[in-house]
Length: 342
Ligand code: 13P
Image (cartoon, rainbow, N blue to C red; front, side, top):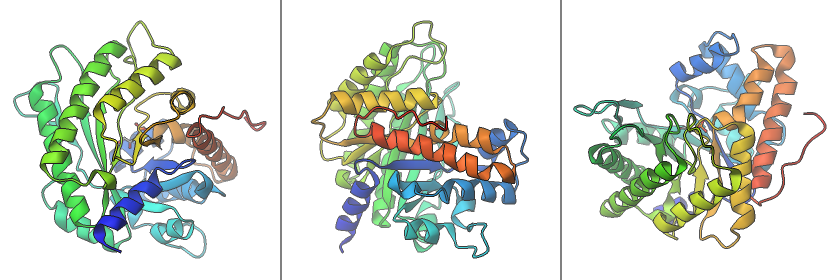
């Protein structure tokens, strides 16, 4: 299969109806924050155990098309006697292993409170190794902050440029890039402001992708939804979020992009699912598939059920599967099933 066909096929598989992506690529410092919240010490072994709980949940492959891993996790294995490398285990379930390849967002010099994502240095070599380790898609997250007089043009341009260079390098390496420009929901801004900034960001990202000859059929876009900031006094309802998000995507995302997999960005699990469901329920004839690539919204219940205790493993997996299933249903625009175990 040619490189181009392989990229198209992987991108399409990641966003096919009924499936979405599990973002389990928290860096070790982020994992520590998550584990601190449940009173668990973050260590090589506890992170391995937690990821094992997620990935070995029975039937995960019915709802999850791909899993984004962190470098450490890509090299870890299941915790059962057989110790199967996670990449091999996921592949055996038809789940595509992915890898976070950016090096995090650092302050953008000369621009107060703004960030640019690092990681282009050495990326070609890292991609080559990740491919041999089994990764077939990658993620790079750019962060755009809304505040007084920000984002600046410089911040949006710098991040869009890096996203395009990263995407081009991935495709050269036979890896599908998830292009993730995240407009943060932190602050007090209105949904209209989020819409303006996201629309402008997406426009510039697609300009850069075009300049760098990125094959749009071989990417997955991972944007934020258009929502009110977390501390905005007026919170837009589900219908408005669905309408504004769809309109923004329709205006800015070319039709040959196979799919859009939203990040949850700090929304509650229920809201993230309801927003996705509403969009898929209302807008049937979309050019791209709309699905999820959630981290917190998929994992919150699992983490809080597990609490680092082996005896909670099974109920933690159950909690994960409920979330995964509800989001899978949301890709068909179907109602969240209230399962008796909740
Ligand atoms: P959240 O869904 O928690 O925002 O995480 C998704 C992600 O991958 C952020 O880069």
